[in-house]
Image: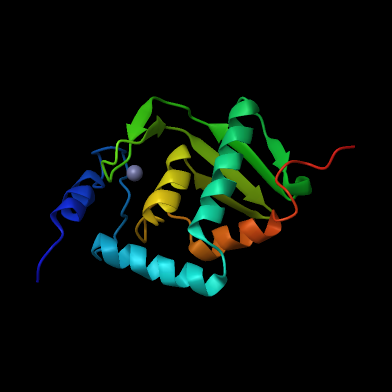
Length: 160
Ligand SMILES: [Zn+2]
């Protein structure tokens, strides 16, 4: 079977210790295009687009940046974001030229908390990549779709 050499080198850049300590793939053995296709199919079934998720994550990132590592309530108080561990910069593992800063953004809704990074919006919006199964930074498409629905009324807290 013919392999896509660009995707193969992306996969190598996603290994633990290359661009990030834990890498992007967890214990997922599937080829990258298979991972992207499976998550894309799930997302389509959920009725939410990768662009909507990327836009939401971008707004979480902006709000968390502005709050300077203190918790910030969004979406009418239904979501709390907080940035921690801002440390240096990281290039996109698909080598598309995109770079962003390394940071963890805690996203809390009810009794659940996810950890996303500024890279997530780019990886999902541009590459349809939610990271491999078992990766510490993978966030399930279903969870992100639920957050998009939760925030459809607007990301910023209601005035007053
Ligand atoms: Zn990229």
